[in-house]
Length: 72
Image (cartoon, rainbow, N blue to C red; front, side, top):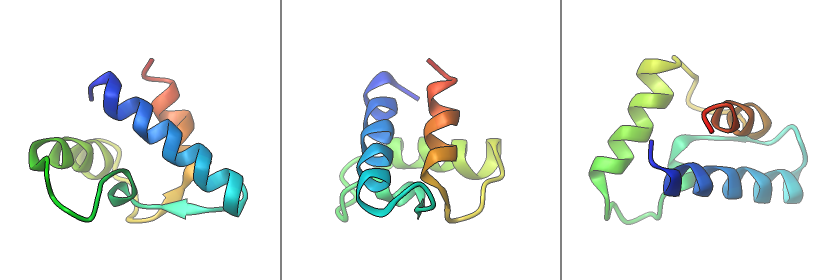
């Protein structure tokens, strides 16, 4: 995944955690607009989420943030 989407994932996780607490869950769709304006990037994140890491549809934001931070 590129640095731009990694940064976006961290920002979204931080915002969700700040507003709903550390127990909040999210799906990979949380990182995209409702409009599918970048299907290639959506598929890249979906592949990382589903195929590479075999994550459930909803995962804890703190878990996703830690996983993405470890990529840097």
